[in-house]
Image 1: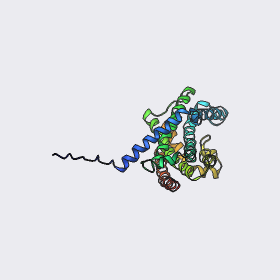
Image 2 (image 1 turned 135 degrees about the vertical axis):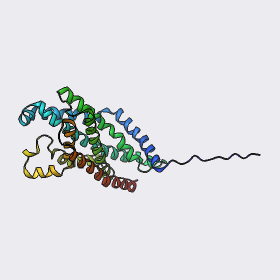
Image 3 (image 1 turned 135 degrees about the horizontal axis):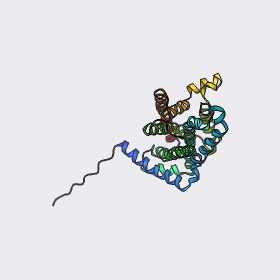
Image 4 (image 1 turned 60 degrees about the vertical axis):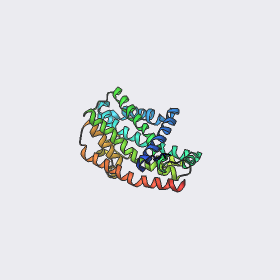
Length: 266
């Protein structure tokens, strides 16, 4: 009698398992967004309102023409919108935890970090929607890329990379705080000085001294400078390197803290 030998399928490396589980849960997050498209208002209608409001209220006074001011304003508004969009990740995460969704995840044979990674990766579509809407609406108003398509693409990817890193701060608060409203309130309180405390709507030289100092150390101001340089022309090396450094530092701090807080809570 011949005895058949059954070989167990080789286990996938840990990194591959985490990625596969995260992508599956990212698809779940993406499906939720598609079924409730009103969640995209903050990355579709809100930036349009900001552009129209600032462009036609301040454009003539600051730049002398709305065309010149649009070139100055649009890349910065794109950064502001993507940064604010990261708030929703923490709010959605906190809501899922309160509803017991993550208790179900804990009972599944999946990587512990996969639910967090899945939520963040699923929400990246919000950043893509924001960039597309901003460029499309800006083009309709007369905005034109002053560099080349590859540089403009690099600007969009750089903005999304920074937002991805910053999102982990939102995830941390989504895990730690007890109510979705608390997550939203704390994050908005942090996002306003980060986004409006920049040269988003007016050149740095027109700001008071103490605010110029804040702009000089504000990471969001570096992202705005990098996006402007890559999309409309100007110095890019320093702001791009500073944006990459800030993104790496923010991710290195908040990612392990978020995962540790999640493990303690679940």
